[in-house]
Length: 124
Image (tube, rainbow, N blue to C red; front, side):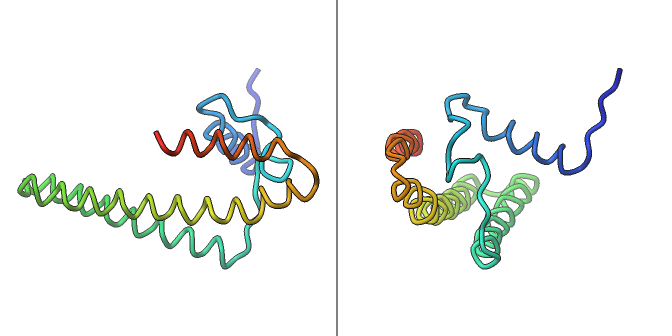
């Protein structure tokens, strides 16, 4: 028997599968759910950052295909890594100012433990 899922259900499943890849994030996180509704401005800014990183990665791929000099590739990889780190800092700031702050206001002190665990993972 084949089970068919609608587009939204498939997207939800993919979202949850990606989020639980490490397996130790509780199901009750980020404002009591595994999803975060972002403002259009916040979403646009985050996606713009990711598009820039994507462009950098595609450029690196072309450099490898064209047998570019190793140090030149490494410099571009470093730039892409910095851009991705910048994305992480921006997203983390949004998370702290919205989800974590809201959970603390609601008396959900476990948000602090979750934030500490997240910071430990990000600083590996």
